Image 1: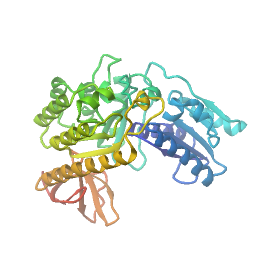
Image 2 (image 1 turned 30 degrees about the vertical axis):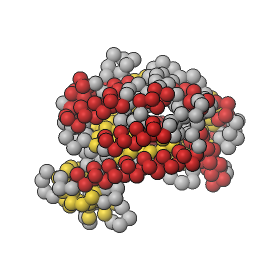
Image 3 (image 1 turned 90 degrees about the vertical axis):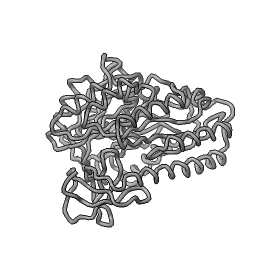
Image 4 (image 1 turned 135 degrees about the vertical axis):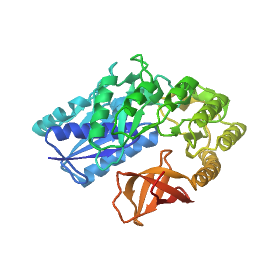
Length: 428
């Protein structure tokens, strides 16, 4: 039987989808794109809009594949089990805590055609899961941590993911070794609260980075999104000792205003964030610092927004995901006073995007003239090859050769709107 997948949300979800597909492939299912006998929908629930996308995906999958078995899993059922169970298009509904039973549930449904809803509470240990191949990808994502203990006032994720749980180091080493043998030259370590890795095991994120860098076949190690306050000078120094670690750090900011950060229950101040960025740039030359910034959070005054805007300009991020605050039922902030009108949130979004686009252009211009190793990933429509430097700058190169999956030196010759252009060269 054929099975395909629809993944909504973050890199952790992408990893988990691959793990579930691997489980099904081992049971004899054929992985495919497009029409299939079984369609797996791995959901996100970070915003109310995310839930809307889940419902849309289910409706579309049912309309286009009326006889297929539809499996809904992921964060949405885990956080809102009753709401997920009411989605009649789904034949099987699973949460985040019991995906090991996926194959048997599908087989049971195929046998009985009785709808299955099975959503269990999160356990206290890391769900055993391993991926050795990523379909049509040149880099591998490796989930090393799950859960979050932070409870930001706007965030539903602790309810969807449970508390911090970490992958045992021996399991991580085994998975990394297999990925290296399968030809992956770059791995991205991911987690729901990545710097919390090891809190439950007496380890730190540095231990996971060391394990990844120790695999001979793996030439690059990249980190997923990071909560900044856990990056102490000691942690940064230890990370910098690993030459394979890529100098790209996605440090979630949310706001550059201390008053707003306090209402969000973020665990750092703007000044502390600034110091962490300075420490990273000091030991990682040409580092790319990227982030997320939320505008229009409940109670955000014009003065507070201007503070955040000025902070974004000062830090000079390489790239920023700007988004308006959206009330998330089930979170404390949904009931906060001072909710901002949609039109004002849109206005603030436009202002923040304009500033961060300026810093993006300046960062890309700084790459011109540099020669960097580029991991080639795909051929674009204009027949140019696209690849990424260690600091995750997208570079386009004209070449008739098939270079996908190779790391080659490229001299950056021009900064474009959201990438750079370069030429292959013989040496770094």
